[in-house]
Image (cartoon, rainbow, N blue to C red; front, side, top):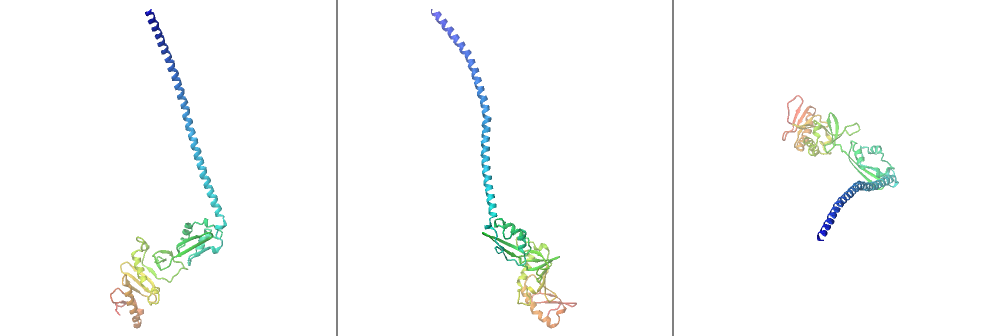
Length: 310
């Protein structure tokens, strides 16, 4: 009896073990197939998610670009409307004010740039107008002001001619040492002529006038402007020698007066004392050269004679 039960129980356990083994293989196969299905479904989901994100981003970019383009178009249309608005246009010639011109012709530049009554102040670009005006040789500086809503004011500062410089041709120079234009028939001619210099002597050194030219200007500034027998207007030529200094040619004298680079006022004062004496002695026409470079003396050289000291 006991043996029969143990045998029966052993057979049941054997069958159950066999059943579990067989079904375990099926379960593994089923699980394997289910995992493969899940992997396949994920592989389809990943590309779709990427496409969806790309479309969303593209939509936002397109929307932002459309907004920016719309705002830009609005600004352009508004600006165009303001340009055609009569309220900001120059009303008449009296609203176009030009001041300071004497020898220059700024109205020619304005006509070339089509700035006239009816032009909108919004369409005027001050930098371009000033640059165009500075192309005229007589104009040194320009100040352009838009006086809203309908007036334009232009102040012209012209070069002041100080002397003529001869370097092959004649050029006008201003008090700042700038050769600003070549001499033309309509330009002023009654100015002292500076000779003996070259173009390199007019190059600025650290923003300042070159030393040799500065010495010429120092002499010119020491001369009285008027009410004197020997003033700046009475000097017809100033010759520059880098070693010997300056030699001046007073109008009506006809000879050169060597004055060097220093002590100009004292030397010229001595010359003024000697000139009446020379006229009294009748030697005026015989003078070839006058040298003021000797202390307390005026050396006068006569033609075909030895130097004399009056």
